[in-house]
Length: 294
Image (cartoon, rainbow, N blue to C red):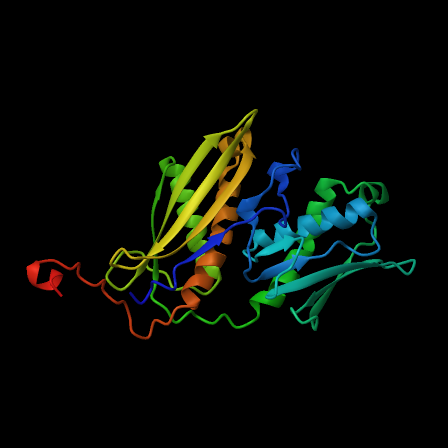
C-alpha cells in the first residue's frame, strides 16, 4: 500500500522538558507528556546573569507560560528545528530588564522583548520563589508568543482531521483530552472536521493508568491516526509516572500538555505524506482458487 513506508511512530521521550507546577514536589518524575520529540518548538535557555536557581526556574516557568498560550516550548536539548529563547538580565543600576531574545535554529536573531523588572523583590528573586517566577513569565509570555504567532500559519494541504474516541478513561477525562487535541491541532494550522467521513483522517487515543510503587501511577496514552479505510497512518506513544493525586485533581493540566505534544507529532506526520492522490483503498484480500493458483 501507499502508506506502508509512511507509518511513523513518534515516541515521546523524557528528560528535556520543563516540569510544570503539579510535578514540582517530585523532580525525579519525568514529564514525558510535555516532550515534543524532534518537532518544532522553542528551547528556552537558563536566564543569563541571574542567580543559578532563578536562571533555571524562570526558564522553566517561561516554558510553562508559553505552553499555556499553545506555543510548544521546553528546556533542555534542542533539535534542528527548534527556535531558541535566551533571557539576559541587564542591570545598569536602574531600570533593570530581562532581554528576551528569540533566535532561529541557525542562531539568527528573530526578535527581542525587554521586560522591565525594576522593583522586583530581591529576596524572592534570589531564592527563585515559584509564584514570582510564574508571574514574571506570565507577563513576558504574550509578547514572546507573538513573535511566533505573527508568522503566517500555513494551512496543511492534507485531509481534515476528526478527533475521535478516547478509550480507557472516564467520559469527562476523555472529553478533556479530545478538546485539548483539537485546540492544539487548530493552533498549529491543521484542518479539523466535526464529523467522521470518507474524506477525513481520524485521530483516536487509548489511555492506560497503571499503579506503580508508592503514590505514583504510569499514565500512558497511545494516539493513533487512521485513514477512512481504517489503515493506520501513524501513532504517538506517551508515558510518564505521575503522582496519583495529580492524576485525580489536575487531569485538565495533564490533558492540555498531552494534547499539545500529540498535536505536534500529528501535524509533522501528516505534513510528510503526499496527499495528491487522495486516499488509496486497501487492496482486496486474495481469494478463490483462480487467484491462489497464480
